[in-house]
Structure formats: structure tokens, C-alpha cells
Image (cartoon, rainbow, N blue to C red; front, side, top):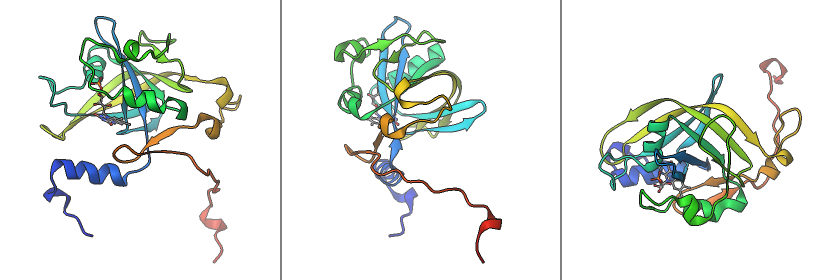
Length: 210
Ligand SMILES: Cc1cc2nc3c(=O)[nH]c(=O)nc-3n(C[C@H](O)[C@H](O)[C@H](O)COP(=O)(O)O)c2cc1C
């Protein structure tokens, strides 16, 4: 099928992109509002995009339910200029999903759902205690992509400090991905786990057989 994506509705463009760019890692983001309430929500328009400075990218979609069209996480991030990106492991799948519920602004999902937090080392915003990895981030910049329904605000986040659970990393910074058990998002309500990791070594052109 050849698809002229410009002719699709915003909803169908979204379905096509999230159904084909798979699996996507999930940034489970803690932010802190000015009144101290901690917000927690998952975002899968997410990836690591640079190593020096270490940078993550997350994209927040237009929110029809708020006057400023910002999700609460984005509003907090713009005000405090910091957040924690927590990695979601298999064991946190169900509670992660509940944190995507449209909680009213004055109800923090963290206390409502009984999620345990731990203090961060370099920022005021706490991390999720059960997350095997947590990136303490500062907001580098935002880039507005489009406007109105379907538009997004892309945030580039500079990683200032990383927590990794002792049982998933060794002294050489090798991560045991099977112990990490990261959850990934597919389309709709579908998720996936790493099934069968395998290794391919990089080949130099000069080593290729003619
Ligand atoms: C697995 C998963 C991934 C999601 N990814 C995104 C995303 O990349 N961008 C986005 O704006 N919303 C995404 N959402 C929806 C938000 O999590 C949802 O709108 C949430 O209520 C936002 O919370 P907040 O208003 O407290 O920031 C995702 C939801 C789930 C369950």
C-alpha cells in the first residue's frame, strides 16, 4: 500500500506512526509542580539522541483538555526545568499504565496509586524507587512541532546523573538487559518485552569477502 500521509486524518497519521515505529522505549517521567505535588506519566515518543552532552528526547502531544494545551508533565518541566526519566521494567507495567490516566491537576498520581519515590541526587524531583534506571535531567530546550490537534512539543533533556540498580550493571558499565527487563510500547494497548537478544559484531569493509 502506498500511503500519502498528508491525506490522512491526524488520528490515522498517529496510528500509522505508532504502529510502524516499534517497539518504542517508555520514559516514565516524574516532574514536580510548584506546590510540591509530584506528577508521574509515561511517554513513548522517546529515545536517547546524543552522548555528549548525554541527551534524551521526549515529545509531549497537544492536550485538548487544558487551556494552554500542555500535559501536566510538560507544564511542570517548563516551570522547574527538571525531571526524572525512569525506565519501566516488566514488573511496573500495570502501574505505569495507570499513571496515564487523566488525573485532575490537583491529584498527584503518585500518592493516589501508592507509588514509592526515592530522593534524587542532583535535583528536587524524586525518582520512582522501583525503576531499575533513572535519569536526572535538566531541560535543555523545547522545539514546537506544528500547532493545534496532533502537534507536539519536543523536549531535549540533558542527563546530569544516572541511577542504575546494582544487579543490572557491572563495574565496566555493561548493563544486563535481561535483568533490566525493559517494557516497550507497540500500538494501542499492546506492549512487548525483550524476547531473544542476540549479538552481531560490527564488520569493517576491509573484512568483507569479495
Ligand atoms: C505507554 C504510553 C506511552 C505514551 N506516550 C505518550 C507520548 O509519547 N506523548 C504524549 O503526549 N502522551 C503519551 N502518552 C499519554 C500520556 O501518558 C497521558 O496523556 C498522561 O495522562 C499525561 O499525563 P500528565 O498530563 O500528567 O502529564 C502515553 C501513554 C502510555 C500509556
